[in-house]
Amino acid sequence: VRERGALLAQVLPEAVRRRSVWILPPLVIATGGTMGGLGIAARSPLLVAGGALSVAGGVAFYFMPEQNDHELLFATTTASLGLFYLGLPFESPQERWQIPVGGAYLATAALGFVNAAYSTHPGRTRLRADLIRVLTPAARASLSPAELRQIERDVYGTDPFIPQWVMGMPLIIGSVAASAPVFDGDVSRNDKILAGTFAGLILLQGLTFSLAPTVADN
Image (cartoon, rainbow, N blue to C red; front, side, top):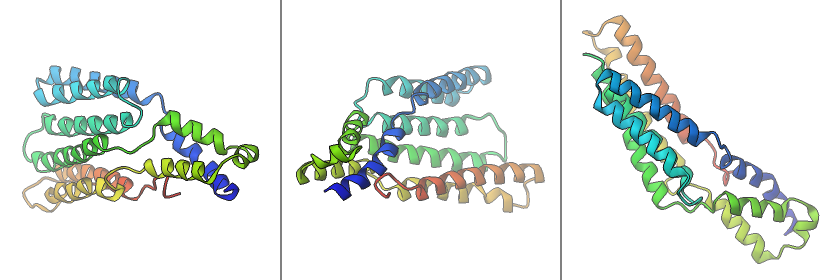
């Protein structure tokens, strides 16, 4: 019990830290407000909708249970990004990468909403209480096997309902589709560079989602 408790004492700080970044919701709200303002200036309904969704997600974060507040924030932010890319006032041939990129983010957001609905995350408050119970040798000595198993279940509960590698797949697939203009003969060199840049960026993000270890993996 003490050895397993010591291992949990190494993992739980990271689990608590991931739910303690207080700047995220205000940043999402500010970004959404900026996006909405750009949408009004550009007369783009999709940009306005994306900004409004981002603001709504940031505000809703404060009213959601701890078990799924971050999952909802991720889903709304990703959906907002999808609308942002789709709403950019570019002309042809930019839609050849715009639509795959926007669609990829919206597909990722759909998976994120599923994660939010079926989240098994115990929440920051409970994780902090678990950490206190395993933080010192004296605290670990008083743990029963049943209590230790419950803490371990809390750690495993931090894993998303949909696996990480699945979450990154829409972006990886979208990056492949978005790179198509790079190989089209009727696309100018500058447009090819732009398409390749955005395709590369979402490929990198998709790989990050897919390969990033979860707390339970540690």
